[in-house]
Length: 117
Length: 379
Image 1: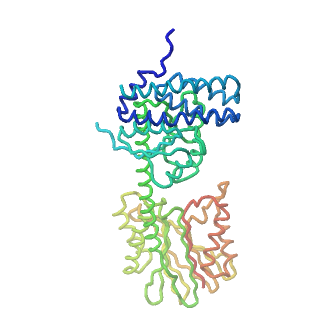
Image 2 (image 1 turned 90 degrees about the vertical axis):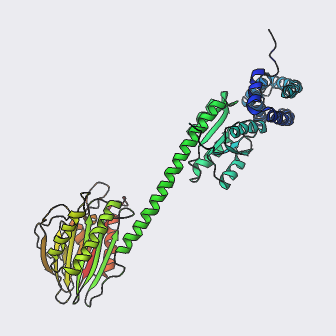
């Protein structure tokens, strides 16, 4: 089975076409500025076992990532949001956070590259 | 068909990327967009300037979408603002809750542009209709207020003065304007015409018919002597000008202060109530008296009664006797007679106020069902 691409190309191209190439660049810049901050806050909420903050930050990452076509990344965030809602910040949540941290550079790189295509 | 002009929209989302994406789509669709990062900022902006639609995220720090909706529905100035909730597909329970709290519709993120355009268009159209409706209502209220002031200005500002007599009068319309009226007209040689009338129906149509009748009475009183003839002439003009089928009940009475004699013509109106100095009722002769405005030659009840020294005469509209309590029982003539006798020692104007209070207490704060009009002559 082919691995799912980091960015869903048709979804991204549709957004790019409707936003215009300049504006999609601005949005990707904003995404790449915001997401590392959100990931840091997610780690902190996990360390402090703050379920509500954890849930809300995972929700926010899911939402913007999904909008830009970063679907696997958004899916991981969605699962973390559910764990936060279930107040279950266990090893599974820890693994999810690590997965997001590991995946983010690839997401950012792919988005920047797609902006210039 | 061209698209209607864009609206002024407020996008509320704590996620900057989401705000930019949604805002851009809306701007490309011809709208002007403002942004807020959380509910509190949104409420501040809503207080500062008018918006046509609020696009509201649910999950937000500081103040979430539910709290914003609570504030909006509790604030009369914001209650009609259409709110479109933006949410993820798996948050459908939250969307349901928002719609129950007053949100107009919802959009699933990532937002589908075609659906967004359709929902924004529909909400803007509804908002414009509501705004037009509100504007019309406020214009009607302004016009009604002018009508109310005009009607109040028609009623006498002061009560007549006659040695040995005390006059009181009160008219309280059931709505902003009413169909009841009263008037005192100086006839010369000390004689005084006292008029009370009640137009069928209530509200603005009744008020206009009342103004017409009032003007005719004034004109006829100045040039016609017998009360019966005054009413017959008024009836003729009313028939000529009355296309709406309205009618009016009236008493036109002429007081001769020297004798205490009241000559009156009565057209379908309740009989005057006459009390002696001890508060006992004095029977009043009665014949058929038909309303004005319907018949070519209505029967007019023409009578002469004597107001004895210490006595009281009450001319009133049926808003007094027909005021109903919660069970539908009417205030009635007996209760009115007893109330009048009880208040008789007071000044005539105070008797009017007391009667109003009695009727209102009897109806137990039920909404005013009919105009209240009372004219009192004490000797």
